[in-house]
Amino acid sequence: MSDNAIDVDPGTVYLVGSGPGDPDLLTVKATRLLEAADVVLHDKLPGPEIIDMLPEDRREDVGKRAGGERTPQSEINERLVELAREGNAVVRLKGGDSFVFGRGGEEAEYLAAHDVPFEVVPAVTSAIAAPAVAGIPVTHRDHASSVSFVTGHEDPTKEESAVDWDALAATGGTIVVLMGVGRLPDYTEALLEAGMAPETPVALVERGTWPGQQVATGTLETIVDARDEAGISPPAITVIGDVAGTRESIVDFLQTDYGTVEDEA
Ligand code: SAH
Image 1 (cartoon, rainbow, N blue to C red):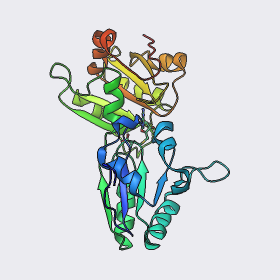
Image 2: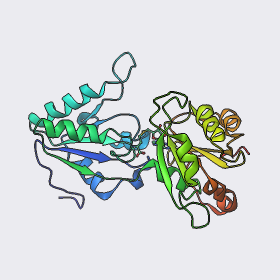
Image 3: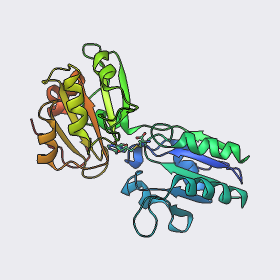
Image 4: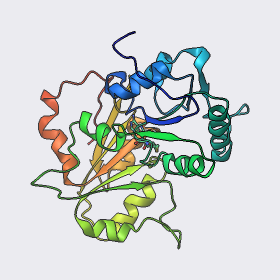
């Protein structure tokens, strides 16, 4: 038995977060479960290095269907139940932490409703780790006493928008936006309209801890241009607030093993 051995229960689903992408940032438990599972269901977000570690005969990519469109969540839920009922120990592997914008909650509810036992294995979320490896602490005694994690996927001008950008601007804390590359112009505008200072520092961290990590920095006013100049594309985290300025004062000593680190002021 290897040091990594762990007992898994047949017919059980393990909702496992894979962390931001560097295999060294997998939890010990995640690593052990990946070795012991009968089958691992994953999409692209765990990142190329972790996906390459998964044995090909025990993994299923449920990210995209043939034809390229996203697999509906209902299909993934059904597949989890089916595999568990066949007696498999199933790992559902999600990028970051499964319960942070990872649909882990929906999967847990579905499994419970279908009498399938499951375990939740928490992980390092990209919402904290991607800023961290770029030299940005999401809180700092001098700069931010609170942090909000929000989705940037929604149209901020939509009447029924689930994210209250005015309220976020008023907190004075750090705002970390996930899924927010495309709508960056919309929500930076919404925050400016809500009265946030145009010179508020903003950073974008693309593929944090993956090979080829990229960082772009600017302000609420300049970050859209910086995004375009650096060619930032998903997956990326947006960090808004004074903490984003910390990077500048520490970056020269920040030892990063991850790809190139580029800045646009
Ligand atoms: N459960 C994940 C988030 C899933 S939502 C977590 O806890 O990290 C998908 C979004 O996560 C992406 O649009 C991006 O904003 C962010 N993301 C995930 N991995 C990332 C990474 N390595 N670097 C930067 N952003 C990442």
